[in-house]
Image (cartoon, rainbow, N blue to C red; front, side):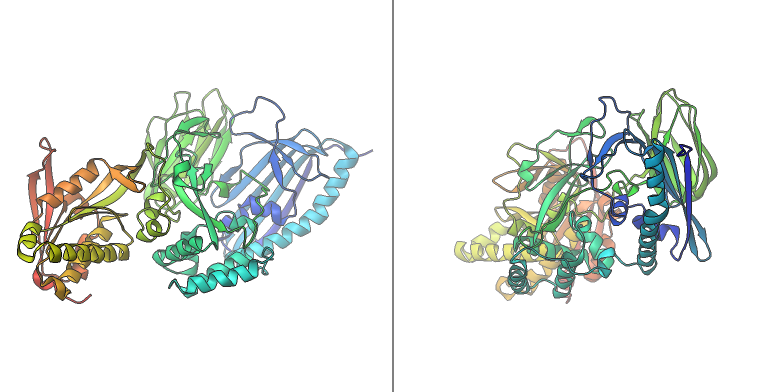
Length: 615
């Protein structure tokens, strides 16, 4: 009586926005399913054996009993994505959904196809009726909202109504705002942050990334980070350190303090252990303080394309299967990965790359192969192995809108306000890219002899304050003082040289020094190890040692760094900011402790006329 024939429904809408504009919203399936009023989901345990890339899920709702195994989502940025579910109960045995975006002169045409295999005729008929009426109406409304947001480059919270704060939250918020306004934070950014906290939904507030907001609000990263740090100290925000797997980049742990990090960490998705580092895999995110607004962390989808925004293509191929893919890629270098290979292949996307590219996946796996393709290639992938393969094409670089531990712990403001944020004693965390600067006073012994101990000590202490001001202005931090020397940390060499030149100028213009204090510096950029020393974050390794040797090599009003660091940074432009009266000399030398290695260095001699220039 009731048909069990396979069901196919197709819906079409014309959009104003282009595929790449609406892609971030449409493929945020966690938000999409919430906006479609679907129940939240949870992990389920249907069977002990699960194929790689598959997961078992169920609804949380007491009136929904569906339990299913979900295949990996598949997508081809920015034109197609889809999912397939195999239900253990409910009206359907299988359900497949696919969304396609076709660009045209008016924006894009969206086509959504749904295929289902009924389990029970009567229940399937009721569910089909619901799909064709209620779900279609909800979907149409949601798509129209996303299209409007994408076309106008707006965020969902900007058109939302203010949400309720916790009891007493409004009064507490006003007290915090008064405190923050007195701390000289940027009032415009603070107002925007409060509006965001009041209007954004739980999905946006679960993890707030300040640099993403900085880009949308068109404000400086430096200013927004200052606001977020002060807001955390004032209990408007909380923060946590998210520990990302270096392979799949998913968050495997989230801790409140750095001393809770203990390596190695296990990735459930990759099924292997990993070590973290300050540059990529330890990232800081924020959420409203629970005494201001409580956040519900329910999940409506855990595997859509926006859970892996760095992945532009993901496909699940059976043995012998061949796929023809459509994509549009930005220039850059991408990594090709598969679940059956520990290695990767590099894909270089260039305007003049190959138009037609065929990639064959063999049982031997990927072994560092390299291929050059165009931005919109005719791309095909074939699985010639004997096992199913989940293949991904992803950006090699990490998202620079994430706030890394290396950057946060290089901030003097963060160190001053959150001095308890240190590593566990004995824990050593790698730092891939960091700039260390050592400064020292030239001929300080002569100054002590000439000025006397009391006056000389006072001048040294005052020079520390000037250095701290100059370093903090460049978003750096003083790690420690050693006699008359300072060790400082920065994210890049530009900041370090700019801080040195600024400190030189401030010293030369301060009459208390009578132009008798002359600063020298050694700057080096590279990798090192972060540790807890005397309850502060300190750094050890060759990069530190080389910077220390450079300051010993420097003379009066000189900064020393390698030619490689100079050439790979914007230091010529930095020197130009402070005038052109300086001498840059190339030298080859040996350093104490590095006798077997010859260093090609730049000796930057700062002329006295430069120090008198106004900034």
